[in-house]
Amino acid sequence: MTTTTTLKDLPADVLACALRRLDGPSLAAASCATPSLRALAADPDTWRALCLARWPSLAARPDLLLPISAAGALSPQRLFADAFPFPSLPDAAPCSSASPHQPQLPGELVSAVDVYHRGTPLLSRVVSTPTTSSWFLTSPFCVDAVARDTPQQQQGHVAAPAAAEMELSWVAIDPRAGRAVNVSSRRPVAVDRHWYTGDTLVRYAVVLAGCKFEATLTCGEGHVVREVSLAVEDADGAAVSGEGALRVLAAAMAAPRKGGKEEDEAAAAAKGRYEEFVRSKRGRKESKARKEVLVDLCCSAVSAVAVLSFIAAVVLRS
Image (cartoon, rainbow, N blue to C red):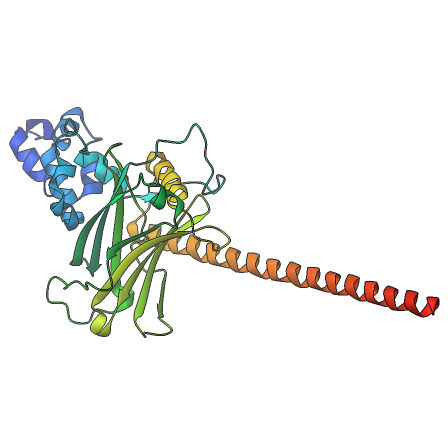
């Protein structure tokens, strides 16, 4: 007589050990199988370890991954569910629109920035940005994770990684709301050179609510990271204010995430949206330039008619 061993027959500690060896998406999928697996998969320590493995920068802010009952802390499982998938926010609402139905703006914005090369962490940094001052709310949104005057030493022993192979994760966290969103395309959407310094500029971007969140990785000789910054542009190429960027971030944190795609496929889709945004912005500029030329021609014609009419009137009087 043969007996069949099922998951229910395995000890809980054996199942918990097996679950700790899974990655985040696999662990989330396993938790949907049975109620017992769901209970085991909800272990905060397991999700905290997954978050730290995925985003090493969070080790600098252990207070963010404390139990959810602590003030200003996020559930590790919620953080992974928010920051791992790509955000999904329709383009219907403009960047700077204020609506009573929009979430409350973050009082503090924590940026967890990690740079990788083929999965190996090169640089990790956490930046906390106060967002309540009028200067921040009215100025163009810009967050510097690594300033140019303080270049960071890369981790590991990777020598001169290719720019196109460098990956970037920029997780924006609202500690008060306990929500987060990843505003990086992970893979580069464009690589070019600075016109003056010759530094390599590696760009990562996502398009949310018609605005482009673009993180720029500036690399010097040997592709040493010299600067990492995040800025936001609207559809016309104008810089978005801090208040406008916070409204989009708060809406993106509360919005559903894109699921059902592999990371490579999702990164390719993000690059496609970026290229569509660039084409649309270029089309807007060309249309605006044509309108300006037409207005100039009309003004010139009106001025010419006025001058000719004045000359004709003077000649007829004389």
